[in-house]
Length: 591
Image (cartoon, rainbow, N blue to C red):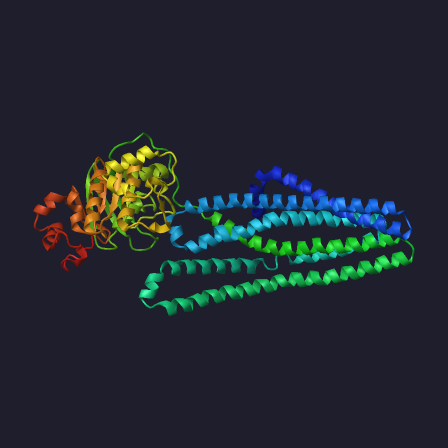
């Protein structure tokens, strides 16, 4: 079944390149014909010399041989180029589909795998597969044609020589077929070890500051050697298995040379063939070394490629549990309404729920201040709103419609999110603001910047929208990154905005600028403010306090302020502008 699936996968990506593949086949056949003609010319040359033929004839034969060799070289270059082109086109299509498939997976899927593993699977594995496509097509098809042509021509010279050479080729190919899957299981393990190593390396490089600051260098280095050692031993094992194929074919080559040299000599001394024919027999045998050697190499490459195909199929086999819903039943604009209808949710089945029977609603234009300790479920609420996870029981409603009935693209355009950590790309300010969407014009960007009161910040950019941003936001302050996040959300014009304390780590001047942006962004929109400082929820209409996934307090902000027994009033008495984690021990709330 797996072999059938592998063939289906290859056909899927090779079929669009049928025209190039056809041209490649024609070039291959032409090249093989030219390779077989060359020895024929030399055979005639040898026989002419043996018979004391005319010098003019020898000159013409020499010229013809040079022309054939030159054309053969040109055809070889064109064949190699086209083969590489076909190989990279097919694997680039596969790489794009594999990356798209991985990006559509659930968040839980990505939490189980490191970025380094994805890089190895999508790039490393498929690069090996590109080499397989580009070289395998040329070498295997060309070698098969060359072998068949040489056997036919030798059979025409003398059937005994053809029989001997045919038997030798059958023996060699039979040995290769027996050994073709010998190293595949070890190859799969090797690629897995490579992915594990790259994932380990990526994580440690990303956390180099924390590793150094906490003196964990020796531990990380020891783990580095452990992971690398496993990869090394598996690489040695797979190469030892592959060397068995190389050793087998080397012995078979020696056997073939001895066999054909003996047959050619016997037929020549028996006067059954001419000296030129004897040369042809041995020359065609020598020519077979390259196709057989290439077939050997390609069988080894096939094993590496099969391991890559297996890993690609494994990734394709994962299907997201979150399915796209139907289209929005109607066009919805303006502030959104939102409801959590008795929602219970746990990240893994059987574990204690993170949210327990959560039941609350927000009217269009209402601003909710969400407070709670770390781990109380604040972030989970935003994840369920974006439908990054599915609720176990209950329902999440947006504009009165269950989010499971909405298209994911429509849902995520309707809800905007601004967090403390903003992901920036190595691109221009324009591309970072629009997420590479060319449909958003510069006039729309300028209008959004002006509406959010960020014109002064924009004027400080060296090249305006064409200013380059380094990967990860290098060259920009935390405040500037937050400003980009505000413009991003504003350009999408969502009906519901979630703010995860965007000003928590900013200096007072930048925080004041951010506050003006927040005011403009929330105007005419429903909002959830996940607060880490009490001052952030001054603009909230409603306050909700979570504890262990349950609502322990919910009501209008002013009513809770006026109620001296409320938790919110207690927090306010401790200090409005202090982080709640530093408040009275009895509260123990990190908002």
